[in-house]
Length: 196
Image 1 (cartoon, one colour):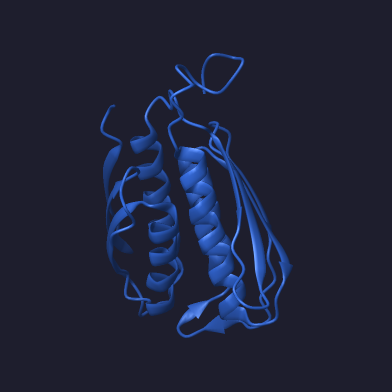
Image 2 (image 1 turned 90 degrees about the vertical axis):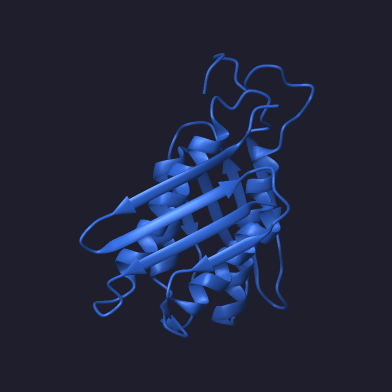
């Protein structure tokens, strides 16, 4: 089996991002973005996705968190695409629903090379800690655009903002684990086209 790992570095006048990941990991993580709640959410992707993940970000947080969150999403998406490679043997589709108390957000992924985000999540509060909740769709859009995946996130219930977002990130991690899993019955790619 080919090594499904990746390293991505990105440096601009706004951020400096380093991401290393292993799709076939155990969920170990080391994450430092300077935004506590965002670190917490990324740790859920790693743990639920069984992805070994290292994230180091220095961003212009004196402005706000937007550049840090978006650029992290860009690099995470690029790393996913790099690690997935030609996607031979990969399941491709994944879905998950991880409740947290009253909150439930479902995630459905097609890791098929076409980028699209459907984000139907409406947390009631504008912020959790130092994290602006409007940055969550910015992160997921950056991931999907750079990974080449379609992602549907749909909130089924919830009234606590922390719970809603945690359900979304956990469900995404679980769906990602399923979509990137290798199936020994699949020798090529999961497409009638013969390519992804």
